[in-house]
Structure formats: C-alpha cells, structure tokens
Length: 190
Image (cartoon, rainbow, N blue to C red; front, side, top):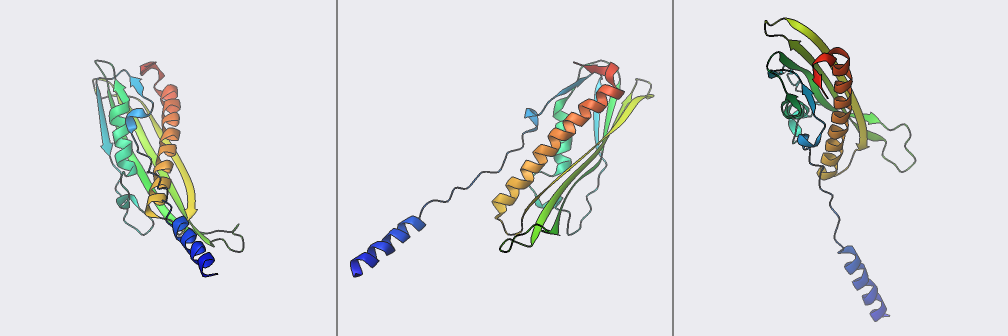
C-alpha cells in the first residue's frame, strides 16, 4: 500500500512539473502593413492628441501606444512620390481604454466581471498645393473593442492588447485607402 501511494505521489509531482507554454506577445511591425503612395513632395505628421490621464485610459501602461503606432505607420507607410504639394496628417485622437464591465452571459462558475478594451482613431488628412492652398481633405475614424477575463496574466493582457492594436490598424488602413481614393484620387499613385 505504501509503495502504491508513493508511486501516485511521484506521478503527481512529475505531471505537475510539466513546462507551461508561454505565448509571446504579437510584435507590431508597421513596415509589414500596407503602403499608400501619393503625389506629394513633403509629408508632415502632427500629433495633436493629448492623452487624458484617467483610470480607464491605459496608453501609458502599454509598450507601444496607439499614437506612436499611428505616427510610425504614417511616417513609414505613406510614400511621397512627387515634387510638389504637401500632405499634412493630424492625429486628433489615438486612445485606448480599459473598463470593467458586467458579464451578463456568465454561467454559474464564470467570472461576473470582464475587462473591455477599446481603441479609437481619428486622423485628418489635408493636401496643400505649393501656395499653401488647401486642395483636398478627409477625416478617417476607426474604432474596435474586445474583452478579456478579469484575472489573467500580464503576458495574456499584452497579447490581447497587441492583437487589438493590429486589428484596428488594419481597419484604419482600409478606411484610409477608401477615404483617400474618394477625396484625393487624383494624387494617389497605384
């Protein structure tokens, strides 16, 4: 009997020592996103958004904030292919919020509260000629949200946030291409 219990105890110890798979967070590389070529000589990116420090705003708690991600994409992926005109890009909002919500669909043993993550982008594109006359402009707005369990690891939280940022950037790029093809189609290079 003692041998049998010892064997079971050793088996439990061995099984509990199995390595835990830790997923690496998604690396956000803006150079892999789509590029837009436009007939301009100069591109100016202005970060006009000022982060609001509140309990729900988490821009200062994440590795790559939405405004830095947006500015990086605009600097690297909007290609200038011309010798006149100026494109001014004003980032008006690039916020990410984390709020606690009630899980109305929770079963008996599930968590009653969840975290909701929301990203919102509002960016203005203005095209000026060499005389600083406004030729065309458009505004691009995109938002996306997701939820997670309340009690998860920091690594899982980072994975969820980075996945959300990648998804909202793809939405934003598609909407930007759509808006620019409507309002600045004569200046786009395909």
